[in-house]
Length: 514
Image (tube, rainbow, N blue to C red; front, top):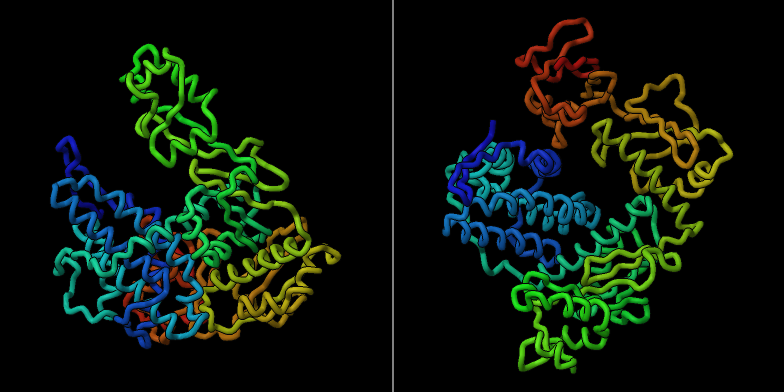
């Protein structure tokens, strides 16, 4: 059990076990594996990257280091655990997700090296920072990084708690990325509300915010936003009237009640029913709300001046109309309103279906434990044949093959071939059957557990034979068997001994016992 104790506000010791990190631990490890798998050719680059996402993740990480050290210096250890665990969600769902093509090398070796180096540096920094709180998790990652970075320390616990590099902290970049993430989150919620998966492209998003700096930040990262939410066009605007947006005053009942006592209701009624958009605009600019009122009302709002201050009122943007307006699904966090064009377009629908098929092929490759350079082919049939899916396959076949690196044959699996992985699924009322055949079955073992079957490569990307421990990790990852102990049983009923060379499993079928 992995744990460390930290003191809470009430002085009690709280144990933070590995379960606290379970939602983020395994996805991170799977993504970190890209580095050790390329260790034979990858060398960390210490040159500062000019890519905005590389600059952001290093700035974000160093800001976190600064925050943790400040809190620990004040003995507020309870305050650092949540930001540390949330860091991995940010790392995986923002940095790695938005940079997966760069990390894979789609934009060239130099760009890949910058991305992997930035990822490696922040991982080294964060595992050193987390080591007092999650010692075994940090050690696990450290052992997979230390050879790449050339660290002499055999354990992360032989290193000092890191200090932040203030030269890498860029508040402007952090602000821009936060604006981008706010917009992406709002669009995702809108898609979920309408039941439109991200794989289906949409025409346009309109971002409305009265803050010009926010809109400039959003525009500066336009391509990342459009790519992540799969939308063709981004429009930004401060013109709330054009889109039927009004300002709304939200009284701070605690602040008003403490000052106004029983007269609070009169002021609240004024704020909710009488205050105008122009007055609220002025309030946002000057920080005070001024209006010539009756003597009775004036006596309620600071005896000598008719004003309310920002600690008494907050202002948000809301739509005058209903949630879906003229084909646009709207969402808001109070400051920003995002309008997503959800109207149907036949070309975009076809593109979405093509991405559905691409996704199925990629999942097959993942099930077969193939990397992007491993050759394979896919056989595919569609029932009924006269369906929209068949039409999309014919029109977008080359594009799907290019995206997956896998040739597709529109026919059933030939009788003289054996499938490495199979998939049968339904897309738009059509049954799509796929068979993936890896061109080389050498150094592959077939593993089955509870009716699930996968093929596992016995060598790493650098052609090194996996250790028994690494093989078990691959099996656990492929079959989602993270709980309890596992053992391997050969087809003849004998148990595979951990000391037996792993390469002897090549071409065999084994069963996992838990």
